[in-house]
Length: 141
Image 1 (cartoon, rainbow, N blue to C red):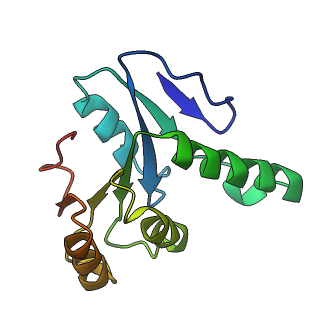
Image 2 (image 1 turned 180 degrees about the horizontal axis):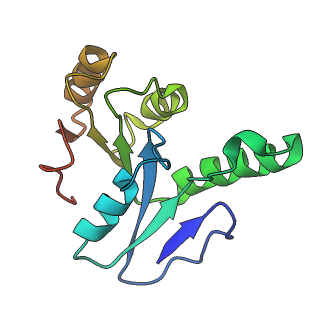
């Protein structure tokens, strides 16, 4: 099951894990990375996907509701997959990285070509955050 910010957060279902899909936005590409992650899944996992294709057109009230859903979903999640794309700046994703680096929830995908990759890689090493350089090598933990 995939929950978005249009959905209420569910009551946790026994035997399932809940993964938040954080990271760079790429909803204009032919195959967004979030779909690749979901397709790799062979476990009992529900996904929390904050993607909103109308993100830039939200009213102040709708944006506040979206942000609050994201913050609540991050807290609710058992794991957070944070994927940083090489060509993105991803300021919100970097905030989420800082918020959850010590949580033991975080799994990071960050290629060397990401503009702040050295910082991200050192942070992940310091806090023992699983780090992948690309989606191909990513594995659910």
